[in-house]
Amino acid sequence: MELEVKLFTMMRGVLTEMVDGISDADFQSLPAGGGNSPNWILGHLALCNEFGLMTMGLPVERAEQMMPIYGPGSQPTEVTDHLMGKADLVTFFNESADRFLTAVANATDEDLAALRSNPILKAHLPTVGDMLGHLLTTHFALHIGQLSAWRRSRGMGSVLKI
Image (tube, rainbow, N blue to C red):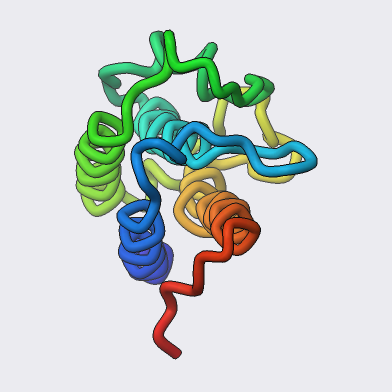
């Protein structure tokens, strides 16, 4: 998992820069033509940090509360009544990411080889390690791509300094 953690950490820095450049007023705005708002994307990624902990059989803080709003199959909305604010989401994302990364660093080979019980993507990702690798890399990158597309549709430039 060393490589996966390294990639997650790099992309976490990209995500931080992308989110920092979005105003609070625009944070809930949906993209033209449909898709996910920055609020939904960051909330979903924070929830997925908790899902990683749950996959490892560890306790979580807000998964039950966040699942209907930011979980798989939820619908992004601009109605702010039940959404977490940008500052709270940034804080929770970082706290949950730190807990997730600590748990991954402490996982044994036996922990990672264990079969998962959750049916989500189980046919493709049967072990705990498979799912953690997905959450740390491909899933994370997919949603960062959505946020990048949202930013570009608003005329915002790339945060990558390549």
